[in-house]
Length: 231
Ligand code: HPA
Image (cartoon, rainbow, N blue to C red; front, side, top):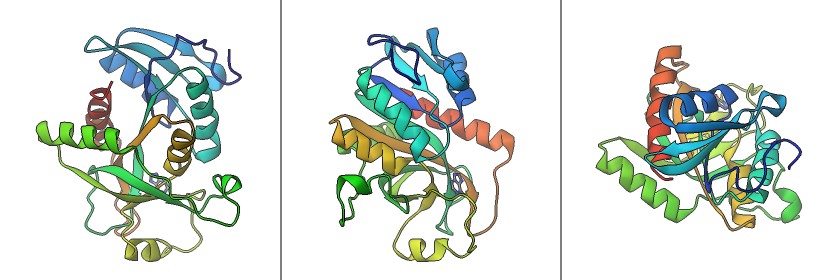
């Protein structure tokens, strides 16, 4: 039994979807899984295992930010997870991105020092698992789902002091900002498991646009289906 996840080896599937919001974990279990069992409610951070098209899959809330996600990802890996797919939202740094677009994060630069203790004095480049990325991209294409693959930024700060903070990152090709993937990619690499982040654009730092609750819901379910297909 681990500290933050009240589960034992065998309770978790090899493929785990990771929404930040635990209620999104419940929504995925309710909408898509059959025979779903809730294995975790510690701190309200819901986790379920069930079947999707006959394949076993888990879905575990991670909370917001890299420290929180890292706790759940460490414990999931100890519990036998082999494929970790974050399903979340991001803020656009690129002015051409529209609300609702789906981004697959190729890499995740960060302002966090969460990975620095591994490589003092150097800058590690957290990167998606190519195999998982390739399979997900091909699945999206065959479903006629428009996805953009590119680099993102994982920040410790939601409310930046400087509203133009995004510009430098955008100049270097960064598509969008969120708060988790750099830790996910580094932990997966360290433990030799696969990881991918699939994100929908929920707001734009460039235009100030914000998704409505209905748009968020619709886009989230689209992204969840794409991720579940990887089980
Ligand atoms: N900033 C950081 N994380 C986010 C954002 C944002 O604008 N939107 C969704 N996740």
